[in-house]
Length: 364
Image (cartoon, rainbow, N blue to C red; front, side):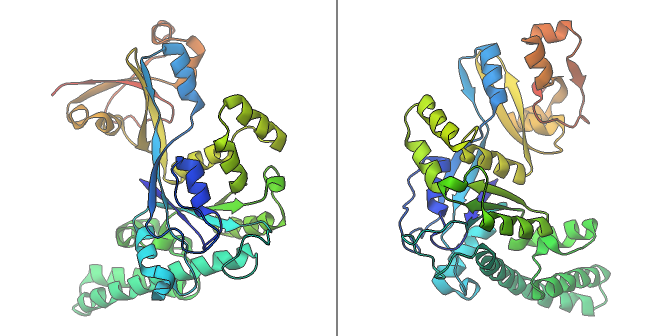
């Protein structure tokens, strides 16, 4: 599962990517310094994993991860191929969620591709280019469906009606995710098409250091727009985050954060937000050899969770022994949880909860 970082050129995307992945994507004060998408596999910060390590004292600890893709900056006309737009739009299509970076700071030394700082306008440019690409997609799809619908195919006629709703919405400047369509019809006819503007989005407001804790007027304007879409906003001083990652010790980083009035790096919050945006959650396995966080979709059953470890675990699933993280932390060990009667034995229908500590019994 991948989250793609998008935005206009020079809004801080590659610097943010460097903070998240500790990779060194080229970061420069000119447009299009990122040509190929950089992909980073990022550890998901989770204090529960630290607590389990403290209690179990395993030989190794393995965190959950999420893939972050740094996609080169879009410009006006990207949907028509401007600024290598077709390539960039194809890269966005391959992601599962969008982290949309908006410049929310003034700095005459950093050029803005549009010549001014206006996050609403920046957002509108990106939205329009993505919507135009989706409009192209829906029109091509409608051509195929229309032929089948004319023969009296009821399913094709139903799909045609839904796609016409999508076309009308996009033509009116509404992203696919914001078009009101029955959920069953959406799953049947819209989700398989993989429209770019149907992907969930998180708006990342890149601010200056002074605005890191409280935001600023630009951020409030973005919040208003995001609220209308039902989207989340995260405030991040990207240049400052880059400085934090350069510090060598935890103590130095903590002092820096304290000076800013922050309790943790904003990059950590962003990684967790991206994980949640992808509709992912974590369960744990805990033993002497290894404490490990495993990534599963929200709503996964116990056999599906077991299958993440190995397909044989899912095929031969018998039962799962489940301890909630809170009970594990409260009692301090699996043995004490058992004694307290807080260990659950669950079957194939069990829906895994975020933070469950699990053992699987299986037979192949």
